[in-house]
Image (cartoon, rainbow, N blue to C red):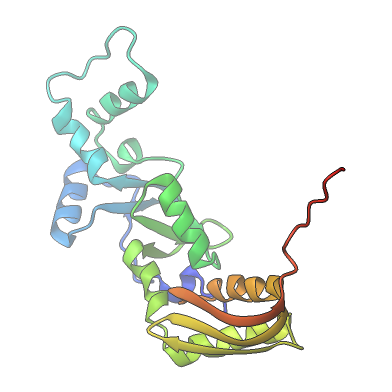
Length: 222
């Protein structure tokens, strides 16, 4: 079974800027290309940071009020410093949040959620920029044909439970499992494995079982 990674859904023709890119150049790029952020690379094309609209807005937010104040926190001082910044190296958020080539789409989605970012530069093992993946790119995994999803589900279940008789029906990414197994725990495990297949939207577990091996009998003391 193929595991989908960021390489399968990313955009490889990535627009990046050098660390020396000027403030106005960055504004022109983001507005002209309708980007919300752009990766910053060094002379070896390694990603060193990301400049976002929020970074550029500090110059407006702190216009005429750029001097640090007493007891001001580190984050606020950093934002105020960006109001005086003139290049990408001074404006960028660093270290960058990236995904290494080969990262599964599920892990990339968790990174985006945890870091509250909308896009991830994709880098090779040397940190060099090879692509970029957005939230909408990750959703492409759910455009997989139903027949491909069904084949992967059956392959996973066949490998895990070779003696079980389980069938799978797929419609618009929704998997319905049917068949007969000996134990409830097997049916539950089959549904859990099916949910892990890339492109599965939901699993309806209609597998029959002979006995419930998850029941716990509590014996009292007379």
